[in-house]
Length: 82
Image (cartoon, rainbow, N blue to C red; front, side, top):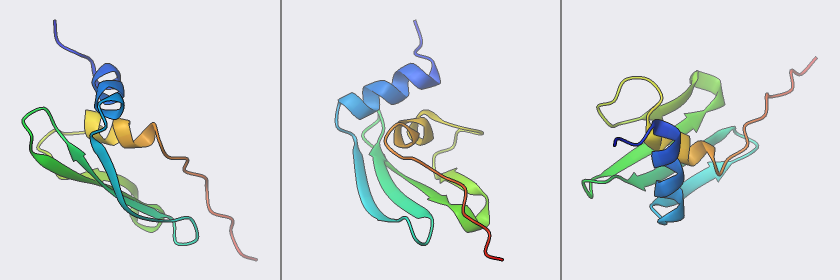
């Protein structure tokens, strides 16, 4: 039976496969590495200024690597300066 994206993401997290490389609440970004099942490491990032989440794996859409990082991050909308 195949794992769905959320189940796989939780497994990646509990197996300790996420490494945060850099993050800044002020600048609105996070960059991580996630070790996939094939032992390949994928870069997952979030940048509030350019549209959100990205992963360099071949999966289209929101992959389990992105979901795993989303489980450990809180993204809040930036306040608009008057």
